[in-house]
Length: 247
Image 1 (cartoon, rainbow, N blue to C red):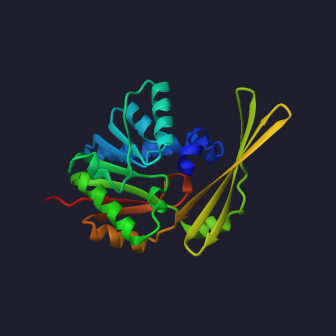
Image 2 (image 1 turned 90 degrees about the vertical axis):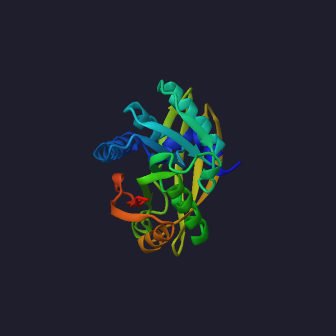
């Protein structure tokens, strides 16, 4: 069981109350792009709890969600049921997309929420990009984002945190960032208070802030062509759009 399995029920608290605004921005941006290209079939890699997949499905897109974390897929199923949306959810590492999906199955592949930052070596990043390219149809798009290390270093090491009250419990989640060159260790602290009793948990996640140069170079090796890059929605990091060339 990885950290995401444990944190899945509290994942939205990581956004510190900004999740709805970020979700709306992201989905509007994706919808405008997809409409301009006539894109209808989408694979959301590292889909988490359905943050992008569910609202896109509500707009009529044919979405499949895949994530390595069983806990996240469990939460995604729960969230989609609450939204009245029937989606295909698969527990699957995006290094193994070919185990589940046929070549050319999707017009677009998403790997947002800094999913690629979980890959720690150029070898695994290249392998993931090849997998994503393989399931794209000709002229299909890979839409990815990555965090920027310098803005993260400029932030306070401890987040402001987010408080919520659920079923009589006071819940508080905050994070601590520790840097080592281009790598980030994110320590997540969860405090649950019930009456006079308090319980605390800690989870640790690791990220690598890949540079645009490394990402675009490896994408080219994987057979993908960069067609756009810019600031990510929500103001954290950069987005990149790659195209699989026509056959």
